[in-house]
Image (tube, rainbow, N blue to C red):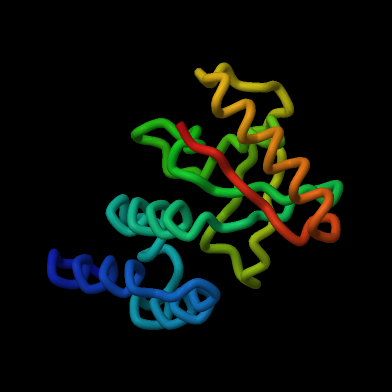
Length: 151
């Protein structure tokens, strides 16, 4: 199926207004409308709209070993022409990837690297991370709350 500019615009709008927790259903409908997954995952504008949705909603991705990473704009580790969803979680110090089009919609990812990336930080950010970590440990059950501190 050939996607014209109006179709792409409509699909991008559909992605943008999808509430958190509903992307699974929207993707299933979009695949049906487009006669299959390949038409959905081969369009760079749709991929970019999906990337922005995940970053805006700070989606949590389950990783091996029980770790949970967060997708953020500042953590985007993909290159401009790269269609993969690679992100760096500065709190965990790991780079991870996931496939947003996977069915069933499990939001499970894989660890790409456990090597810390060189991300410029300030003492204020380090203090905030320490403070939030301490607060979450004392106030919430393990893995019930996540946070991210951006520059």
